[in-house]
Length: 250
Ligand SMILES: CC(C)(COP(=O)(O)OP(=O)(O)OC[C@H]1O[C@@H](n2cnc3c(N)ncnc32)[C@H](O)[C@@H]1OP(=O)(O)O)[C@@H](O)C(=O)NCCC(=O)NCCS
Image (cartoon, rainbow, N blue to C red; front, top):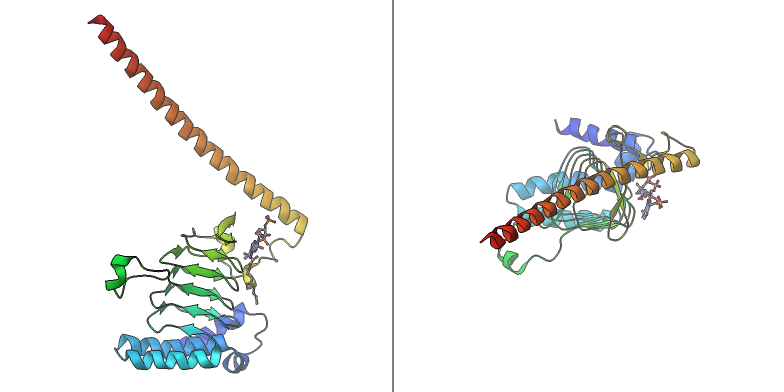
């Protein structure tokens, strides 16, 4: 069982990193792999109440790999940290299956509210659902959820929930392009699709097409909200007239 998982982790890493040529490469050359393997042990220790030992080993792993994963974090299968240096994963983080992080990513907490100081196990760190890719240097902060297959751009700062299958970039992070869910399910190295449509002009047109679709949906929503509001207003006016008429009758 353990070896099957071990092999699964290695193979998923080879599938996701074009630079990984063999299983030996992964075993000897990938600090992200070493950190995740150590995490599997420290998480076991943490769950079995050997908490100091768990944290001690995780700090040792940090010393050697530059990656700090709190043993209390819950991480799914085939998790891949590429390069890794500077990655920090906080205690109450939840990570689904097939998630990829690049270097210098923080899955961090934000200052808890005054009331919550007493609640030690309160969720303070993010949840990353299956298939999420987080670009290098991105900071994902607080008890927010990044939906399945979403992409977070390099150096983004994310402090709000991110819907499934979209790409969020910038500070504060905002959605730039909704992803076709079918397409988003396939892993693309660095989160950047090149195979689907390599022609940059065609990609720009496709992006514009997507943006126009989004705008149309927003306009439809706004129009129906406006109609609704206008309907309410005219109801109010009619009611007002009735009140005035009935008063003038008396
Ligand atoms: C976010 C990301 C996945 C988007 O890739 P994509 O789907 O190909 O998106 P595009 O390149 O078409 O970009 C869409 C828009 O977002 C902008 N954008 C892309 N990445 C951005 C980033 N990190 N920060 C700010 N804006 C970004 C683009 O300029 C473009 O804006 P425009 O429409 O105004 O021109 C990718 O840019 C990224 O950051 N990947 C992480 C790569 C990484 O960390 N590599 C480390 C390897 S060691």
